[in-house]
Length: 524
Image (cartoon, rainbow, N blue to C red; front, side):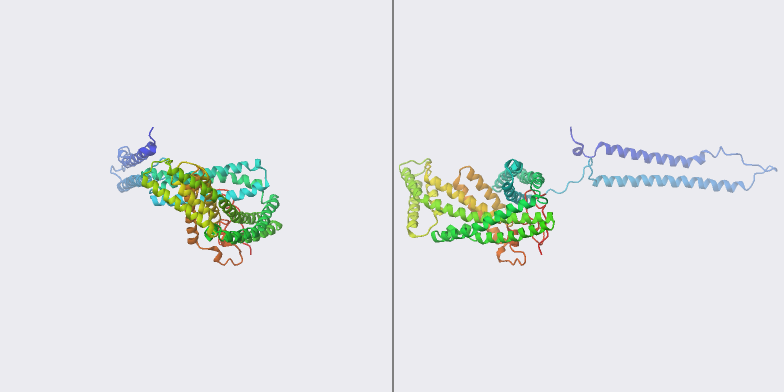
């Protein structure tokens, strides 16, 4: 059955028009009857009185003429008024029907968004959904430190569902960037899918935010325990930071600057976050003592966000040190395994058909890479992860189809690249745009699928784009924070939502509707 919205004006509207026309006609008929009535009743009037002398009284004639004129004028005015009102009502109804937007009336559709508008909307949706997922993950870590698994399972499931929706949105956008699909209508639908997936991710988190608040009860008795958890993690990080500084110094002695570059400045940023956390934890304590539960909860959430990011930064230094040690231990085995792969390729053990010229060129390149790595091992400090990356790539180009130490080397390198990009985006999300986030999501997918080489390349691309975004945004450590230590860095890191001059509310577990629900005034 075809909808009345598609056919045009609904039948009920036509019925209303005919009723109004009938009313107008009735008005005209009544007015006309009123006009004709005096004429029809002239013959029925009483006889003209006769004087005793047999003559008609002379005073009656003027009276009859005057009464007849009045009787004709009033009905005429009524008819004209009825016709005028009917015409005016018809014009108004016609004009209103053309512009009405109420259900049942077809209105002029607003202009369709341009492809550029749709792309901007999709990019904004991706950034917002990614921020919501990351901040929800941060607050959830504090909840899990305090409550049992059965209490937090619904929150974890909602976060996982949001992560799934976000990953699907990133995959759709990535294909869109690559020109898939090609049809214009299908491409518009792809953008709609990106926005819809991101909205669903936010909805999942928004739906569970009230449950998290009830569980934590930050504006009630739960605030004291939550403060203890946050302060405990703060003290633990404060103790780990000097050790991480010693570790970083040792890395500078053993490796090249390029090897340590992924965590350059991390400990300084961690100290900045911890300083900000100190201020907010003190403010939360003061607000709690003053009975200001809502403000105390907001200050606590800001402190928790800063502590979580300081943890990411310190852990990033520790993890890189571990990865570099593992890589250095794996380099000799990777060299031996690569030599075995080269020997197998020379004997014709190549899984893909190559011309003799192509095979010779690839073998020569692999020999050159192995020789360069051996020289670096004896020349002084070097980058073990980069050495493994070059060995794995050289063997991969031979396409022998074998697994061994070079494959293990490729996996270690890919994991390091993905983790490094993840850390960088997390602690700089206030400035990182959608391109880096989508590339990072793709790197995670490739790593999960066992495509170590592609995961490494994509993660490094994501890190490069994210660093460009931060450089364009500016370095927060060169700005004067005045009486609010670490405020600029907290905004850059997404700890605060940058909605107000004081940095805005802290970000918490939830989607777009609930993540900024904890508000506070800036400390004096």
